[in-house]
Amino acid sequence: MSSQPRPTPSAPQAPRVTAQTLLEKKRLGEPITALTAYDYPTARLVDEAGIDIILVGDSLGMAVLGYDTTLPVTMDEMLHHAKAVARATRHALLVADMPFGSYHVSPEQAVTNALRFIQEAGMSAVKIEGNNADLVARLTRAEIPVVCHLGLTPQSVHRMGGYKVQGKTASAVEQLCHDAAALEGAGAIAIVLEGIPRQAAELITANSGIPTIGIGAGPLCDGQILVFHDLFNLSFTPPAKFVRPQADAAALFREGLARYREEVSARTFPSDAESYHLSSSALQELAHS
Ligand code: KIV
Image (tube, rainbow, N blue to C red):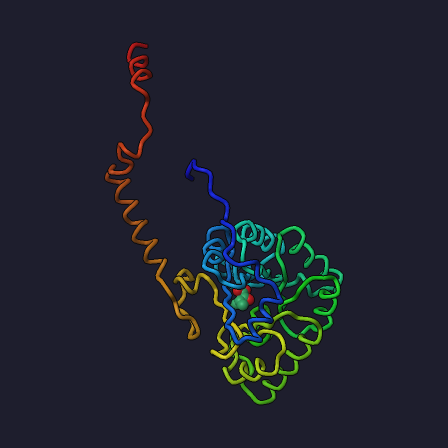
Protein backbone atom coordinates (compact mmCIF):
# COMPACT_ATOMS: atom_id res chain seq x y z
CA MET A 1 0.00 0.00 0.00
CA SER A 2 1.06 3.59 -0.53
CA SER A 3 2.45 5.36 2.52
CA GLN A 4 0.43 8.45 1.54
CA PRO A 5 -2.74 9.03 3.56
CA ARG A 6 -5.79 8.35 1.40
CA PRO A 7 -7.92 11.46 0.85
CA THR A 8 -11.37 10.77 2.31
CA PRO A 9 -14.25 10.66 -0.14
CA SER A 10 -14.82 14.21 -1.31
CA ALA A 11 -17.88 16.24 -0.42
CA PRO A 12 -20.78 15.13 -2.60
CA GLN A 13 -21.77 17.29 -5.55
CA ALA A 14 -25.39 16.52 -4.70
CA PRO A 15 -27.03 15.72 -1.35
CA ARG A 16 -27.46 12.13 -0.17
CA VAL A 17 -30.15 10.27 -2.09
CA THR A 18 -33.16 9.36 0.06
CA ALA A 19 -36.40 7.44 -0.43
CA GLN A 20 -37.99 10.82 -1.16
CA THR A 21 -35.44 11.52 -3.92
CA LEU A 22 -36.42 8.24 -5.57
CA LEU A 23 -40.14 9.06 -5.36
CA GLU A 24 -39.49 12.48 -6.87
CA LYS A 25 -37.51 10.88 -9.72
CA LYS A 26 -40.40 8.52 -10.41
CA ARG A 27 -42.83 11.46 -10.40
CA LEU A 28 -40.64 13.38 -12.86
CA GLY A 29 -40.02 10.32 -15.04
CA GLU A 30 -36.25 10.55 -14.41
CA PRO A 31 -34.57 7.12 -14.52
CA ILE A 32 -33.06 5.88 -11.24
CA THR A 33 -29.54 4.43 -11.51
CA ALA A 34 -28.43 1.60 -9.24
CA LEU A 35 -25.47 -0.79 -9.00
CA THR A 36 -24.11 -3.27 -6.51
CA ALA A 37 -20.84 -2.68 -4.67
CA TYR A 38 -19.22 -4.79 -2.00
CA ASP A 39 -15.98 -3.06 -1.01
CA TYR A 40 -14.32 0.34 -0.51
CA PRO A 41 -12.78 0.91 -3.97
CA THR A 42 -15.77 -0.19 -6.04
CA ALA A 43 -18.24 1.62 -3.79
CA ARG A 44 -16.17 4.77 -4.00
CA LEU A 45 -16.04 4.65 -7.81
CA VAL A 46 -19.78 3.97 -8.05
CA ASP A 47 -20.59 6.76 -5.61
CA GLU A 48 -18.31 9.28 -7.33
CA ALA A 49 -20.02 8.41 -10.64
CA GLY A 50 -23.25 9.78 -9.15
CA ILE A 51 -25.20 6.49 -9.12
CA ASP A 52 -28.41 6.89 -7.05
CA ILE A 53 -28.52 3.57 -5.19
CA ILE A 54 -25.71 1.27 -4.07
CA LEU A 55 -26.91 -2.20 -3.14
CA VAL A 56 -24.63 -4.32 -1.00
CA GLY A 57 -26.26 -7.35 -2.57
CA ASP A 58 -26.00 -10.89 -1.28
CA SER A 59 -24.80 -11.53 -4.84
CA LEU A 60 -21.44 -10.81 -3.17
CA GLY A 61 -21.56 -14.51 -2.28
CA MET A 62 -21.12 -15.36 -5.95
CA ALA A 63 -19.35 -12.21 -7.20
CA VAL A 64 -16.58 -12.00 -4.60
CA LEU A 65 -16.76 -14.94 -2.17
CA GLY A 66 -16.87 -17.75 -4.74
CA TYR A 67 -20.09 -19.46 -3.59
CA ASP A 68 -22.34 -21.15 -6.19
CA THR A 69 -25.50 -19.44 -4.91
CA THR A 70 -26.38 -16.60 -2.52
CA LEU A 71 -27.70 -19.06 0.08
CA PRO A 72 -24.51 -19.55 2.18
CA VAL A 73 -23.97 -15.80 2.72
CA THR A 74 -24.07 -14.93 6.43
CA MET A 75 -25.00 -11.82 8.40
CA ASP A 76 -21.34 -11.41 9.41
CA GLU A 77 -20.20 -11.45 5.77
CA MET A 78 -22.88 -8.96 4.76
CA LEU A 79 -22.06 -6.60 7.64
CA HIS A 80 -18.32 -6.76 6.92
CA HIS A 81 -18.87 -5.66 3.30
CA ALA A 82 -21.64 -3.16 4.10
CA LYS A 83 -19.34 -1.32 6.53
CA ALA A 84 -16.62 -0.98 3.87
CA VAL A 85 -19.16 0.39 1.39
CA ALA A 86 -20.50 2.90 3.92
CA ARG A 87 -16.97 4.21 4.61
CA ALA A 88 -16.51 4.91 0.88
CA THR A 89 -19.70 6.76 0.03
CA ARG A 90 -21.24 10.19 0.45
CA HIS A 91 -24.00 10.36 -2.15
CA ALA A 92 -25.87 7.15 -2.94
CA LEU A 93 -28.73 5.66 -0.97
CA LEU A 94 -27.20 2.60 0.70
CA VAL A 95 -29.23 -0.61 0.74
CA ALA A 96 -28.09 -3.97 2.12
CA ASP A 97 -29.56 -7.33 1.26
CA MET A 98 -30.75 -9.35 4.24
CA PRO A 99 -29.12 -12.74 3.62
CA PHE A 100 -30.99 -16.05 3.40
CA GLY A 101 -32.12 -17.19 6.85
CA SER A 102 -31.71 -13.78 8.48
CA TYR A 103 -35.40 -12.85 8.20
CA HIS A 104 -37.12 -16.20 7.84
CA VAL A 105 -37.26 -17.57 11.38
CA SER A 106 -39.32 -14.90 13.19
CA PRO A 107 -40.23 -11.21 12.83
CA GLU A 108 -38.19 -10.49 15.96
CA GLN A 109 -35.08 -12.08 14.41
CA ALA A 110 -35.71 -10.09 11.22
CA VAL A 111 -36.00 -6.75 13.05
CA THR A 112 -32.88 -7.48 15.14
CA ASN A 113 -30.84 -8.34 12.04
CA ALA A 114 -32.19 -5.42 9.99
CA LEU A 115 -31.33 -3.00 12.80
CA ARG A 116 -27.71 -4.16 12.65
CA PHE A 117 -27.46 -2.98 9.02
CA ILE A 118 -28.71 0.47 10.00
CA GLN A 119 -26.96 0.90 13.36
CA GLU A 120 -23.67 -0.96 12.89
CA ALA A 121 -23.10 -0.76 9.13
CA GLY A 122 -24.50 2.68 8.26
CA MET A 123 -27.01 1.47 5.67
CA SER A 124 -30.17 3.50 4.95
CA ALA A 125 -32.41 0.58 4.03
CA VAL A 126 -32.53 -3.19 3.79
CA LYS A 127 -33.78 -5.40 0.95
CA ILE A 128 -35.80 -8.59 1.36
CA GLU A 129 -36.96 -11.04 -1.29
CA GLY A 130 -40.51 -12.24 -1.96
CA ASN A 131 -43.96 -11.10 -0.97
CA ASN A 132 -43.79 -10.70 2.80
CA ALA A 133 -46.00 -7.67 3.41
CA ASP A 134 -46.38 -8.40 7.14
CA LEU A 135 -42.61 -8.25 7.60
CA VAL A 136 -42.30 -5.10 5.48
CA ALA A 137 -44.92 -3.43 7.72
CA ARG A 138 -43.12 -4.61 10.84
CA LEU A 139 -39.72 -3.31 9.68
CA THR A 140 -41.27 -0.05 8.50
CA ARG A 141 -42.87 0.45 11.94
CA ALA A 142 -39.38 -0.02 13.40
CA GLU A 143 -38.19 2.90 11.17
CA ILE A 144 -36.24 0.57 8.88
CA PRO A 145 -36.89 1.45 5.23
CA VAL A 146 -37.40 -1.67 3.11
CA VAL A 147 -36.72 -2.34 -0.57
CA CYS A 148 -38.53 -5.44 -1.85
CA HIS A 149 -37.53 -7.89 -4.60
CA LEU A 150 -40.00 -9.81 -6.79
CA GLY A 151 -39.78 -12.09 -9.83
CA LEU A 152 -36.60 -14.14 -10.07
CA THR A 153 -35.59 -14.08 -6.42
CA PRO A 154 -32.19 -15.79 -6.14
CA GLN A 155 -32.81 -16.97 -2.55
CA SER A 156 -35.70 -19.11 -3.98
CA VAL A 157 -33.36 -20.97 -6.36
CA HIS A 158 -34.36 -24.39 -5.03
CA ARG A 159 -38.11 -23.69 -5.16
CA MET A 160 -37.78 -22.23 -8.68
CA GLY A 161 -35.63 -25.17 -9.87
CA GLY A 162 -32.85 -22.84 -11.04
CA TYR A 163 -32.48 -19.21 -12.07
CA LYS A 164 -35.48 -19.03 -14.41
CA VAL A 165 -37.45 -16.12 -15.81
CA GLN A 166 -40.64 -15.71 -13.75
CA GLY A 167 -44.06 -14.20 -14.54
CA LYS A 168 -44.48 -15.86 -17.91
CA THR A 169 -48.25 -16.53 -17.74
CA ALA A 170 -51.16 -14.10 -17.34
CA SER A 171 -51.97 -15.48 -13.90
CA ALA A 172 -48.31 -15.19 -12.81
CA VAL A 173 -48.29 -11.55 -13.95
CA GLU A 174 -51.51 -10.88 -12.02
CA GLN A 175 -49.91 -12.45 -8.94
CA LEU A 176 -46.84 -10.20 -9.33
CA CYS A 177 -49.06 -7.09 -9.64
CA HIS A 178 -50.97 -8.18 -6.54
CA ASP A 179 -47.73 -8.79 -4.60
CA ALA A 180 -46.28 -5.43 -5.64
CA ALA A 181 -49.43 -3.62 -4.48
CA ALA A 182 -49.35 -5.45 -1.14
CA LEU A 183 -45.70 -4.53 -0.57
CA GLU A 184 -46.35 -0.90 -1.46
CA GLY A 185 -49.32 -0.90 0.94
CA ALA A 186 -47.08 -2.30 3.67
CA GLY A 187 -44.62 0.61 3.29
CA ALA A 188 -41.89 -0.62 0.90
CA ILE A 189 -39.85 2.27 -0.52
CA ALA A 190 -39.03 0.55 -3.84
CA ILE A 191 -39.30 -2.82 -5.54
CA VAL A 192 -36.57 -4.62 -7.49
CA LEU A 193 -38.08 -6.58 -10.38
CA GLU A 194 -35.73 -9.30 -11.56
CA GLY A 195 -36.00 -11.72 -14.48
CA ILE A 196 -39.55 -11.05 -15.69
CA PRO A 197 -40.97 -10.21 -19.14
CA ARG A 198 -40.76 -6.50 -19.99
CA GLN A 199 -44.57 -6.26 -20.35
CA ALA A 200 -45.06 -7.56 -16.79
CA ALA A 201 -42.57 -5.01 -15.44
CA GLU A 202 -44.25 -2.24 -17.43
CA LEU A 203 -47.65 -3.11 -15.93
CA ILE A 204 -46.33 -3.26 -12.37
CA THR A 205 -44.45 0.02 -12.84
CA ALA A 206 -47.49 1.81 -14.26
CA ASN A 207 -49.65 0.69 -11.33
CA SER A 208 -47.09 1.32 -8.61
CA GLY A 209 -46.79 4.47 -6.51
CA ILE A 210 -43.23 3.52 -5.52
CA PRO A 211 -40.24 3.14 -7.85
CA THR A 212 -39.50 -0.16 -9.57
CA ILE A 213 -35.86 -0.99 -10.25
CA GLY A 214 -35.37 -3.58 -12.98
CA ILE A 215 -32.72 -6.18 -13.67
CA GLY A 216 -33.60 -8.35 -16.63
CA ALA A 217 -37.05 -6.73 -16.60
CA GLY A 218 -36.90 -4.52 -19.68
CA PRO A 219 -36.52 -0.78 -20.20
CA LEU A 220 -39.75 0.54 -18.70
CA CYS A 221 -39.00 0.19 -14.99
CA ASP A 222 -38.38 3.42 -13.04
CA GLY A 223 -34.72 2.48 -12.73
CA GLN A 224 -32.12 -0.15 -13.58
CA ILE A 225 -29.68 -2.12 -11.46
CA LEU A 226 -26.83 -4.45 -12.44
CA VAL A 227 -24.16 -6.36 -10.57
CA PHE A 228 -20.90 -4.36 -10.71
CA HIS A 229 -18.83 -7.43 -11.62
CA ASP A 230 -21.13 -8.24 -14.58
CA LEU A 231 -20.78 -4.68 -15.88
CA PHE A 232 -16.99 -4.98 -16.02
CA ASN A 233 -16.52 -8.64 -17.04
CA LEU A 234 -15.32 -9.74 -13.63
CA SER A 235 -17.83 -12.55 -13.13
CA PHE A 236 -16.01 -15.39 -14.92
CA THR A 237 -19.29 -16.40 -16.62
CA PRO A 238 -20.71 -15.37 -20.01
CA PRO A 239 -22.89 -12.28 -19.48
CA ALA A 240 -26.64 -12.88 -19.16
CA LYS A 241 -28.95 -11.57 -21.92
CA PHE A 242 -29.82 -8.47 -19.87
CA VAL A 243 -26.21 -7.41 -19.13
CA ARG A 244 -24.50 -4.86 -21.37
CA PRO A 245 -20.83 -4.94 -20.24
CA GLN A 246 -19.23 -1.49 -20.30
CA ALA A 247 -15.56 -2.46 -20.10
CA ASP A 248 -13.34 -5.54 -19.87
CA ALA A 249 -11.62 -5.10 -16.52
CA ALA A 250 -10.58 -8.77 -16.54
CA ALA A 251 -8.56 -8.20 -19.73
CA LEU A 252 -6.99 -5.08 -18.22
CA PHE A 253 -6.02 -6.99 -15.05
CA ARG A 254 -4.68 -9.96 -17.07
CA GLU A 255 -2.43 -7.67 -19.16
CA GLY A 256 -1.15 -5.84 -16.09
CA LEU A 257 -0.52 -9.08 -14.20
CA ALA A 258 1.42 -10.63 -17.09
CA ARG A 259 3.58 -7.47 -17.37
CA TYR A 260 4.25 -7.40 -13.63
CA ARG A 261 5.27 -11.06 -13.64
CA GLU A 262 7.61 -10.46 -16.60
CA GLU A 263 9.20 -7.35 -15.09
CA VAL A 264 9.86 -8.99 -11.72
CA SER A 265 11.21 -12.12 -13.43
CA ALA A 266 13.52 -9.99 -15.64
CA ARG A 267 14.60 -7.83 -12.65
CA THR A 268 13.48 -4.69 -14.50
CA PHE A 269 11.20 -3.89 -11.57
CA PRO A 270 11.80 -2.06 -9.31
CA SER A 271 14.07 0.48 -10.99
CA ASP A 272 16.49 2.74 -9.16
CA ALA A 273 13.92 5.53 -9.25
CA GLU A 274 11.43 3.23 -7.59
CA SER A 275 13.82 2.50 -4.70
CA TYR A 276 14.63 4.36 -1.47
CA HIS A 277 18.25 5.56 -1.07
CA LEU A 278 20.57 6.06 1.89
CA SER A 279 21.95 9.60 2.23
CA SER A 280 25.60 10.05 1.14
CA SER A 281 26.66 10.61 4.78
CA ALA A 282 24.97 7.40 5.89
CA LEU A 283 26.62 5.60 2.97
CA GLN A 284 30.08 6.91 3.98
CA GLU A 285 29.53 5.92 7.63
CA LEU A 286 28.48 2.48 6.52
CA ALA A 287 31.59 2.16 4.33
CA HIS A 288 33.85 2.96 7.32
CA SER A 289 32.11 0.80 9.88
O1 KIV B 1 -27.91 -9.38 -4.64
C1 KIV B 1 -28.05 -8.65 -5.62
O2 KIV B 1 -27.09 -8.21 -6.25
C2 KIV B 1 -29.40 -8.33 -6.06
C3 KIV B 1 -29.53 -7.65 -7.38
C4 KIV B 1 -29.39 -8.67 -8.43
C5 KIV B 1 -30.78 -6.87 -7.48
O3 KIV B 1 -30.33 -8.64 -5.40
